[in-house]
Image (cartoon, rainbow, N blue to C red; front, side):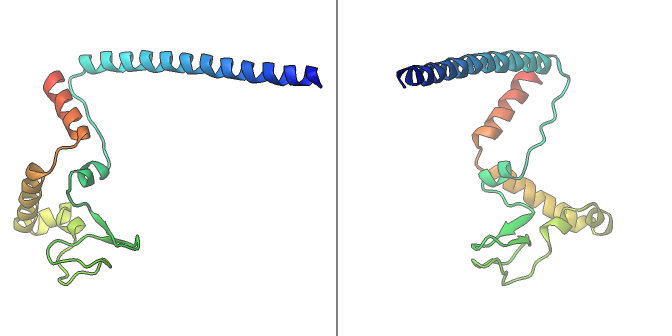
Length: 142
């Protein structure tokens, strides 16, 4: 029984040492990959960053979708006021429809008015760490 306790203690110590070695190895791999990525960025002519709506939401901007207090998803509408349940007092046009290529083709004035409004909102949005990082990369690299 004492031998079993020693064996278990050695196994635990071995597992701890193995975990620490794995962590050290992974940290080294991450650092190497970051350095490789940095070299590629420094050599690039351009960089495309594909982000999700979370970057805009974090800045206080609206997205194509809205969510009620119960978590129900619905298409966002432009104009009017929305209650807690996601219903709108004024059923304005769908945000998604106004930003579409079809609206640009069929009703360019509405498309441009919407995009100008969106641009103005973007200029006044809070800048999060994600946006500040992208801007710093832009200023530094390109």
